[in-house]
Image 1: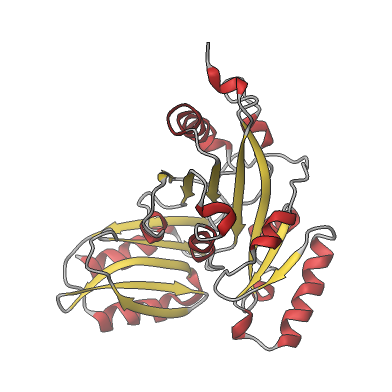
Image 2: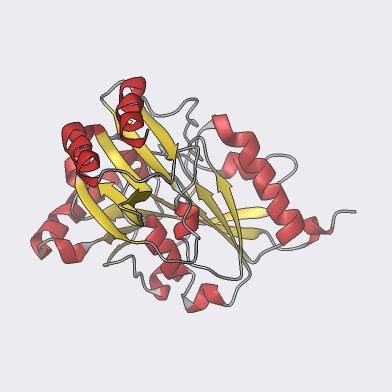
Amino acid sequence: MDQRHHVKPIPILLLTGYLGAGKTTLLNHLLDLPSIRSKKVALIINEFGTLGVDGSLVRAGDFQKFELNKGSLFCICIKTDFIKTLDAIANDVQPDLVLVEATGVAETSDLEDFIDSPNLRGQFEIKANVCLVDAENFVKILPFMRAAKSQVEWADGIVVNKIDRVEPFVVDELQTVLRKLNTAAPVARVSYGKIADEFLQTLTHQRKRGEMATAPPANIYALSFQTDKNIDRDAFRRLLAELGTQVLRLKGVVRFADERRFVEVVHGQYNEKDVEPDGRLPKCLTVIGWQLERESMKKKFDQIFQ
């Protein structure tokens, strides 16, 4: 007899939030919270692209990590893979807690139907859906990105991140917007994803009803490139300037002048930093684009990487 059905359900803490909100930074912070660091934890990292980058950005630790790429966690297109992953976690890992980081373009719905499937029933429970909101950019993207709206609407707790980048009155106005989208979820204001343990403990999951997505978000796609060739930095930056807002998000490792660098674009802002010599970051780059035909975008980056 399977002994798993005689134990208490394993709680799942879900992290959502639009592209660039800081979910991986929040995840790393959570792993150090007193209420979590003493637990046996399993991680599920969900990315939109075929090559995962976020998983390698999670700090090293004594936990098992599972990556679900090629689609949104809330889309039935990867339902089978998600259920298989949870089944493996329940059977092989048997953790005290599962932390799930959803892709930033996910149009959120509830995972209750997934964990109620016959081979998972009674083994998991949703502890809370924590939505991370970028204080600097959320209002700018809200009219255009349906996922940003749904993520807030479905949240059990809302974390307004990057408050150090804006004036206090901007955060006050943002909270007014968030309250119109979600009247019930508690709100925390933080920088660098540093929520208090006490805030996390106050959250409880409220089940909501809604349809799962049946396809990826319209007009949004991910491209993944894998290369360790030297890339012309000036040509790379010119391409990004040319594409502008057609690049929703970019992150990964690029080699410039025999030096590997981690590069990212968040809402048009370009950042670049050193790559740690431990080899954890893969030699790949993920680009999430829109408003430009996929093959046209791919061709432009191929010309840089060839």
